[in-house]
Length: 410
Image (cartoon, rainbow, N blue to C red; front, side, top):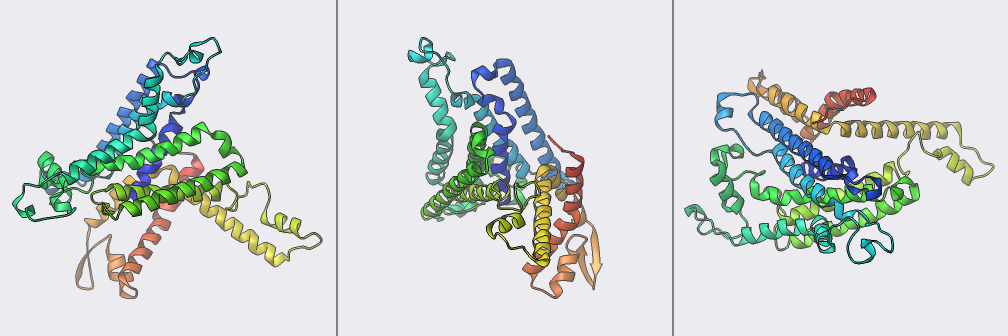
């Protein structure tokens, strides 16, 4: 769920950071110079994301790593998805801006006041709101299921097998098997699967546009709750559609099938709806809320007072929940920084040899492998180690950065 979550959230951030393209002409709709400036920023950011991904893929710059350098990866996929979705938004967002005009203007005689034909406006809106992902998925389905792999070892293979798929053939032909992930026949972040992964980013884009265009619905607690309910319903529908499509096209992350994209989009939409409901809908304790739990309970029971012990318990729970919420927000403010930091630290520790109890370990896996796994099941040891690493290594600097108001941006 990590990479689909990154794509979805990144898509949501595009219209929020470039909301000027969704404003009415009276509010200074961006002209060509402003559009050109945003296009340059988009290309610059995409190039930097790709470059950072290449840097992490070659670190620690050993000869064997440089010889089998990988051109695909997580940040490389994020860079491509960001570039495509941002260009789509900047190119077509004008079609979502209401057309203004008086009864005697062009808008009332069949031509929009901005001078663009209505047919062009409709085509741009259709492409932005649904045509683009449909084209991506349709191309993937037709190309994947009409492809016959010429490799001899794939002659008798039937079905959607990663090693004999179109993605494997394209990745191997474009940059060679030695540049794929672990030297395999295909790359999990290859070209064909990125075509469908962009749809996850597009789904976040649509949700981000809704937030920008309907701010009034997100400004009141009642509006937030209604919107959250709608988002949860949409997410459940997408997830159900993905499961149904999975009966025909397998749900697989390695090939990033359309059914997998639908299921993850549904999960992310439901997750955002629940998060919105919790933090902005008043379900999660907040020190800035309009009324505390004690006041609400006291108002429902006139003449009765909560015991001091119960009041202390509710205050402690509310305080703890608030700190958890603040920590989640702090971690979400610098996601790229913590992703890059985690990759650098873990890769470095994994190259440091450690000999323990007569066995060879690395500084990264000696604790969960030689320590925790000795007195608990290995999956539980791995989960506990990941949780401890998160709490001890990431949470303190995240809260420090949030307290100082520092943002590491690209």
